[in-house]
Amino acid sequence: MGDVVVAVATGHSPRHRRLLDLLVRALGEGRFLPYRDRLAILEELVRTVAVRSPAMHRALGAMWAEDGADHAQLRPLLRAMLADPADRMGTWELLVKAGIPETALWEIQGLD
Image (tube, rainbow, N blue to C red; front, side, top):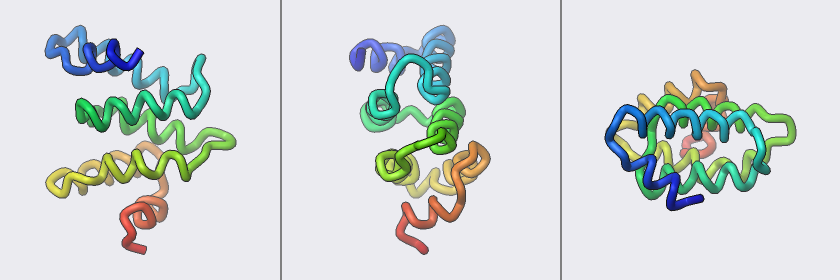
């Protein structure tokens, strides 16, 4: 599955971007796969091909808000999303808009 995801994520056609957005949205909504497996796929997308699409922010917000969500497992992925200093403010705003509390982002960044 990981190779397929990376192949789609690195495609440059609008069709590939649309497929990627649909995949990320489905992962965020929690259909068909356990939380841990969905998180692993999203981590692969963020770490290997630097996916930072609006769909990724919404998926992370949806996973944060799930009943019984394991925020501790999600924190390293959020930290990776915020790692680029050039884009940190924009990413921060999109994550807050997606439903991740700003207080949690402060804690993740170690700025509390």
